[in-house]
Length: 163
Image 1 (cartoon, rainbow, N blue to C red):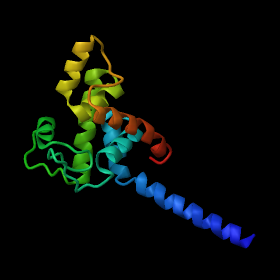
Image 2: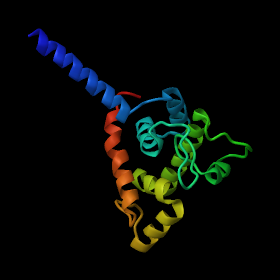
Image 3: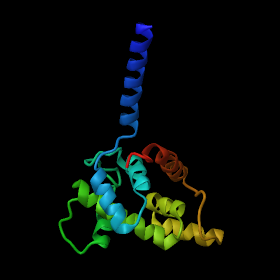
């Protein structure tokens, strides 16, 4: 009986550790503040950050996107009139990333379509919508982008109730 209880405690501990490695949650206050400012679901923001950077504020992509929300410097420049923006700063990156996500949601009037645009580019999504004669997307020609949107949608359940 004692051995079973100890084994259960160890298994729960391992599960908790793996869960927090796979679905970390850092910068909660920054996410909540930006989400409130721009009226974006904070659960969506946390799942997007997980997909983009796994909450690593130092990450730089091969396309030179920077930080938690993987913003291109040109995108950040278009969102603010400031110069010398520190995209490695978590609060700055989250604020600008959520501002950009809110812009995309408002532009396309659909969260999934906004996520396609966040990953594949606003111009690509506008072209695909025009070619399909529709106002929203459920998939796109880029397999990686389809997987990205699906990952965010699935990951959201792991952040509900945690943020």
